[in-house]
Length: 275
Image (cartoon, rainbow, N blue to C red; front, side, top):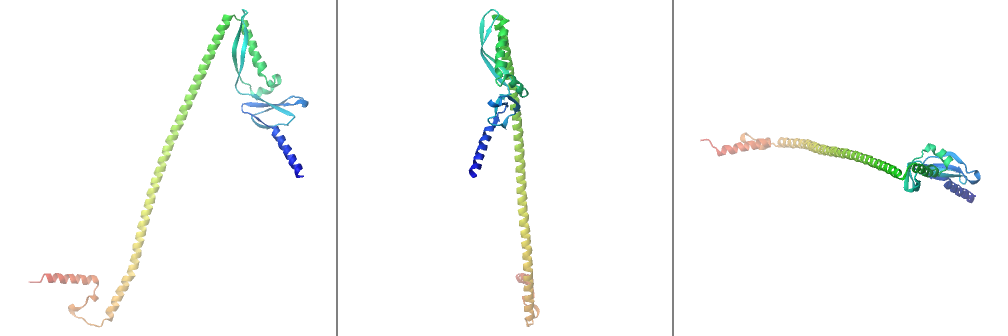
C-alpha cells in the first residue's frame, strides 16, 4: 500500500513539473493544443510569471511584447535604370502590443516577423528603388542616413540630460542624507552630554544626601552618649561626701569648658601681679 501511494506521489510530482512553466518578463505566453488534439491556438494569453498547463495536451510559446530590433541583411534593390544595389543591413525597430498578440499569432503564427517585417522590408525597398535612379536612390539614402544620425544624436543628448538629472538628484539626496546624519549625530552628542550631566548631578546629590544622613546619624548616636556621661558625672558628685569651701571646690563640679576657662584666667593673673 505504501508503495502504491509513493508511486502515485512520484507520478503527480512529475506531472506537476512538466505542467509548470515560466514566462519571462517582457513576454507573454500563447497556448496550442498539440498533435492528436488538433493543434489549435487557444484564446488564453498568459502574463509573465509561473503558470500551469495540461501536460502532453497543451504546448506554450513565448512572444516578446517589448521594444525589439529586427535586422534584414543584404537586401537587393533594383533602380529604375536597371542597376542592382544591395543594402548591407536594414534595421526595423518594432513593438508588439500585448492586446494584439492573439490576433497576430492567429493570422501570422509566432514567427510573425518574417511576413510582417522581413518580407515587408524587401517589398518597400524594391518599390523605393524602382521609382528612382541610382543617383536619386543614393541621395535619398544619404538624407535618410543623416536623419538617422541626427535622431541618434538627439537620443544620446536626451540620455545625457536624463543621466545628468539623475546624478544631480542623487547628489541632492546624498547631500540631504549627509546633513540629516550630521544633525542626528549632533542630537545624539547633545543627548549624551545631557545624560552625563544628569548622571553627575544625580551622583553629587546622592553623595550629599549620604553625607547629610551620616552626619545626622552621628549626631543621634553621640547625643545619648553625652547624656550618659553627664548622668555619670552627676551620680559621681552625688556619691562624694566631702565638703569643700571657697576656691578649693574641685573642677569636677564644672564642665570641662568652664574649668579650662578658669585655668586660663589663673595663668594670666600669675603672669601679671598687681603692683
